[in-house]
Length: 512
Image 1: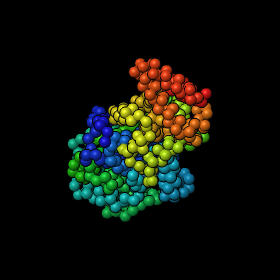
Image 2 (image 1 turned 180 degrees about the horizontal axis):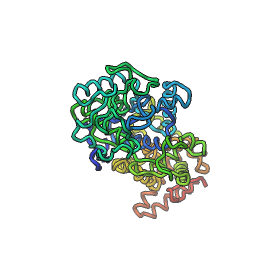
Image 3 (image 1 turned 30 degrees about the vertical axis):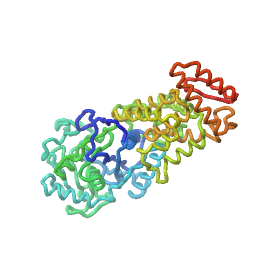
Image 4 (image 1 turned 135 degrees about the horizontal axis):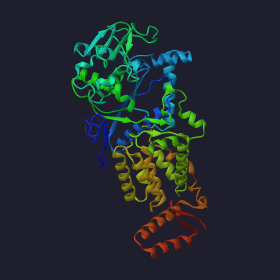
């Protein structure tokens, strides 16, 4: 494990804290998954991009991470305050399909978006409809303990039983006056305004397609209970990190804490990680407003998904990010320049591809990101490699500062070390950033050396190794202000028909 102290902002404490897992070296991480009634828009996907970097950072540093995500395919109403139409039912009506057909289609679409953005698919992905028995059991226990009540044939959680229901959100009851917020509506069955539904029965939404038998009648679960039960099913009674968007803080995550800790009788989750909104000039991007952008719509407009990902990573996850096509165009130019600098690295194609293959291993793509040995073996200068790996990890460990991590990436490309070492380092960084660096290098390299170096195809492996070693020695000589040695190395290369040039991106070479 790298000797790096991880710090993240904890919504529960409202401050940046050192991350200490329940079990040394292991992390149980939960992600609130999509409600699969429509395509995910790019604002939704900003959250998953940032959560992906969090997970990969922990793996990169050396933690054994188990990440669980739910798929909401029942119970999420159009208002988070337990009123309105079921979103899955609305999707089924819109497309004249069954709810399960809608759920499968949009789950597959979400997976496709994740793949296009190089987002690692979680270790466990569980649809809510798989866990009805777990939901019913939790409701039964909450009723037995006196934390829930039946009214109007629905089962509600009684928030008045808790001393600090608002511990996560820092809300207060006065803010929840009916009509003052668009996510809290009146339900005359509730004893208290903040109470929430654990189980709906046929007394509500008679046309609900998905229903199950329960001790309280035929019905279906409320939205909030699924994350509590699915996380406990796969991560146990103690969880390290719970993730989501800032719009999940209240009421969804607030309700999760209330029901989970009442059910368990102890603290449930230590760290809460929330990603801020992607905004447009008209406010937060949302499906309810219509006209939302998807990954595919960006592709249709000519943008590589990696450009949007790079756009997200240049901002901090806790800050609102304003989207415009002008801003995206600026990032596209920056990404294209970065790709160009990486393509111009003079490297041995076969060695690069072997390192990428060795790093990937023979599994399903979920390799151990802790193991950077394949890339380290590629590097000629192990000290430079280790130093940059530590700097990169330190940047990310400071509350997942992706902007600082990208700065370290640029620092590598400007460094005096040889190009093969640079390639090894940026490939290792892409384990976390996942912005297509491996593809750039693999596709740019053909034959014995990078085709971007004039005459490179005529250079054999022995001469290429000599060139790279000479450039590295010359860089060290310049660093030591031994300019006579640096000039001698340049002249020796020239005698062998190799011309080197010092550029802002580093030292390049070509055949004379």
